[in-house]
Image (cartoon, rainbow, N blue to C red; front, side, top):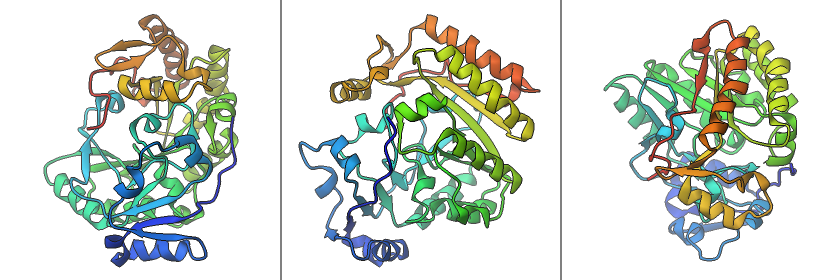
Length: 344
């Protein structure tokens, strides 16, 4: 079930991060709370016998100096039908939110958000790679980066630099509200704000600490009014009780009107996860029924059986295409599952 977001109790910061402007910004943000200087983030993140869920209930932030490489090739699980090469950055790792189905809880021993203070190095690598050709850049693949805007303005900084790399499409995906600070920014045509939408009962039960469905939709409408490029993701589709009716209502009541209001595209996909991550999460999360469906494994990826994927394609994909004036605005992630499930 949804839980209220807890304030961060303390800051762990690498000594090397203290000299960076964003490092000093974090020091100011945590004034009055414990600040622990460390030589290396592994001293915190690599501890044995960490309790992921307990850390979600009592969160801390770890500030680091990110080491190269600063951009990674995205796995096929997130590329979908996009024809451009897809990369992601990890200026922020782990998430403020607490979604039951998040793959990060199977990938990391620690739930603490990890924030990099040396953003300029990431921007420099993006500019250098842009000279080689067009690509798609997800800056929120391993974290809901927009939620950290009050601590470090990652998204605002990317917006201000988007004009330097006009051939790069920058995607910011979120389950949160649109921060006021973003509304005052320019609206670059190569930056897309993507909201993940789920039926309200999925949000309440399985997307802990996230914005409500109503708040996300309000943020979408506000972003459209201010001239931002906006897209929607229904990903993952989950086999909850009454899922057909729940997703049909989401599409007819909310997504169809948003498509007519100017949303550029909708992406959808079935639940899927690297098998190693899935195995770890299932052992730790006996409390979440959506993680204990009889999944099938193929090439290292756990997902629903083909018969279920076909039904999701019909119940969700076909409805979205009917709601859109152009099939090209509807992007399927189903059928793009291969062995590249895990992040190296």
